[in-house]
Image (cartoon, rainbow, N blue to C red):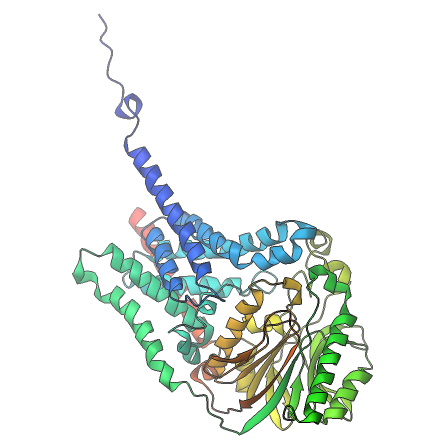
Length: 521
């Protein structure tokens, strides 16, 4: 008689651990999705800055001691859950004509970089001082996605969630890079504390990771100067408004021009009647004018002449060689067009069109601009009414190499003309205002935001908003702003913090990878 042998354990009975593993995987997946949404909830215009380190702590806790490919997956899901709602204004803008694909595509590409950050965090999480290396790796991933592809897309950096938070003063030391690092360091420290909850002997490093940046930011607040160091200037900021018609504005340049000319004429009437003080100069938004090589605009010249002060005004200019540029011009009362600043960072698939044949399926700007605009590579510093003004245009404010170098080159005041009328009543303008607030602290300069349809604002050098407009209203601001000459540590250091953290992050990944291979050899 043949007695059947017992089958192997994995054949006779299913592994009872599998359902438990699946439940744990589902729990981790749900945690990073919730954390991504929490990071969005902590972003402007909401004053919930403290959610950002908590959200990052969840990601750090999930990827801790996992394989890099698992870290990549969790990081990408986290990034997608964060960026989809954060970039909802893209869907508001393009969805009716192009469906969800531009919105989903941008969010997916940017989430890939956050996934790379998650993979690196998982790899370095076994090193000593793990919270430091995990934070450095994530900031390195932020730096990469701020530069690649097509010039990068820095929207959604951790630093931009901190415009009202305790960590904002750190921008005066290390710019947006240090603020992002501080958020990630606190989050990584909290995650490590949670894992070591029953082992107090291992609390020293994660506790320091949490407390040092937080206490450092709080200690910096009293040191952020706002007083005038080179006198003050009175500035009028024009917001002429625009119709809320989204893509319809592509062919409504005359509407933007005429609305802002009317708003500027109201300023002239208000000054002549004594209702408002005469400004030293006037700031108008991006894309108010459109000029050929002759650079003439009789209406702008008339406004400048009636006020007898220069205008800073944005427009599309075409040079004699045919080059198209997005530029900010100093328009003088007598001579008209004078100095100009040319935008440094062009919006991909809008102001510059990679892969035009494919881009036509997702971008209306292919037909609007048959040729790419030409960027500049020099900081914008204009001499206006005896004052050096640092200038950037709209999208420029998201980048670290525009306003910092302008302050280093002597700018005493910062100005960012912008056109956000495309995006309706979305959060986009408030997200951009948060970046302006960080740049003010980073450089120690007051910042004036001049938007076609809002939000226009006067931001003090400590990042606080003194005055701001509402969306889709016509309103002029008339403010007295301090001129400052003292250079912050961040201005002196420039890109050094970013390169330092990049070296630390890459070095930690290389070391962790070498140790892993050696252990598996």
